[in-house]
Length: 126
Image 1: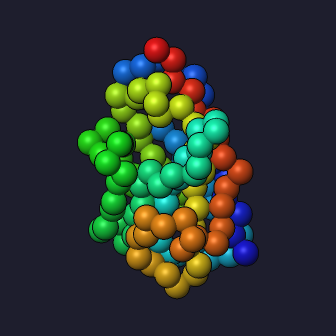
Image 2: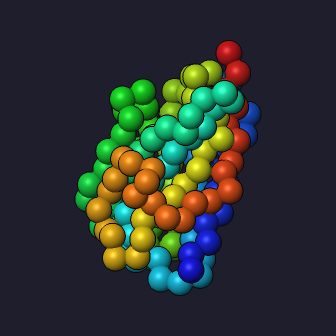
Image 3: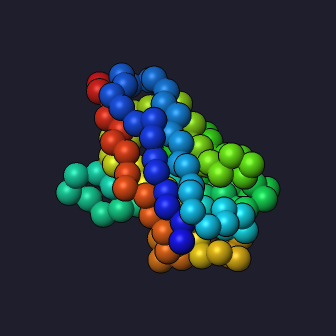
């Protein structure tokens, strides 16, 4: 079983940047596509970004494309989300998620993930 722990959230002014990390521990880290999702108060969870196991394929939500960058370091069992030009609309709890072992492709659908972190709060002030 894999455990995921997000970090790097916080309070930032509009236009600022944050870098989220998602550290995996437990069983094998490899051969898993992973994704970042977020949930704002009163709203449903939404897709943010996803990356394949190799890192060669990435997809982004239209709302963050060009501002956010997802990356991974398999040697460190860590996935990152670099967030630039943050907007108040980016305020949410951000969750990382892993696909089942052996499912290496990226995916934008939350139902394709079976392991989730506890979330980290990102607040962007105007």
